[in-house]
Image 1 (cartoon, one colour):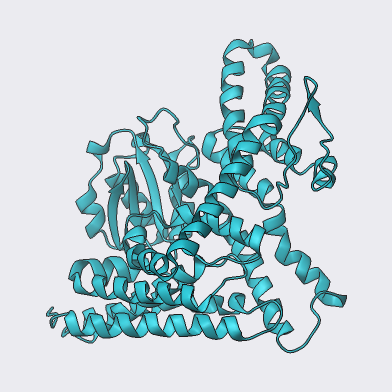
Image 2: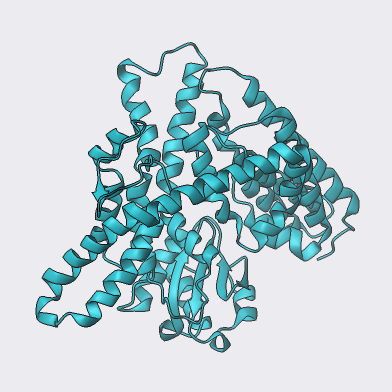
Length: 449
């Protein structure tokens, strides 16, 4: 068994070495890398590598599926890149830094904080179910703890966005601070703007828990900073460039970029609401049915801004239940296929992948069992499609941002303590798991060694 350091070194070698890497980051299970020259990478060798569960190229990005220990491998991978920061992005890398790649790079580092807040919120909901008032007394501090990652989300996003856009993170925090400045926060809902620019009142939005305003602001900061930096002599850079950048970007962000970002977030959330209100269970079925393919191509984190926005504005999200059904469907499909495996080692691997998906990590089952054997993939798609449809019919909701595994069940507890939503998601999960398992078992032919 390779150590994490050995695995990181082997991966880098098969990617063409440190000089060939322009950008590297990771999500929950995948190492995501952009290369200067794709011809120097060896995709087939990465697929067969010990310690990796698979590899693929999506939108110019090399994705190496490692599993839950990807964070530990990344810690060994980053120093091997030398002076370059693994989180930096080459903005001129031939257009390879696509929108989904940017979103993944920005959201992946802050997921632990969001999950922590979601889990605490879920535990409080369970406690409230026993008739305990969690809004006062000693519980108030835990309520605060559960709200911090979401309320101050612009600060979290500013740091990860700064790393992604290669700009000073402390300047990025200043941009986030302008959105959360007390004078602006207190003006929300009053109908009056506390700030003007050239005599024009600046728009007022609630930027707490927002996503796009700070991302747009930090992206603007990176552009303005680079332009100014080119024209300022080295002797004055330290004093002039940061100050002039903020003097330009913060008014520009408050006047134009942040409001556009706010409208984008509102429009995106309203669009999803319209889709589900208009097509109802059909929308849930289609999202669930194609969810395994969305995960397969590494696009599943693109829904994170919508989920966070829903939780911030509605108090709950209805997309996370579909993702939860997906993991249980992957677990069921892997179990069904495993029962048809003749080789003990293959069956053991399939059962391990099934358990991993049950706990919230679906990629091992998807890449190790579903894709190679094909019919289990259809079982997972059908199971998740039915589960997604049921989430709409039963009105299942998630009250915090969590990774969709069985340990996240407390977050589906209604904050009021009512059991209805918990029973609804449980019915959806059971249906997804059973339908996927039975379909996979029936359709899959006996698998030899």
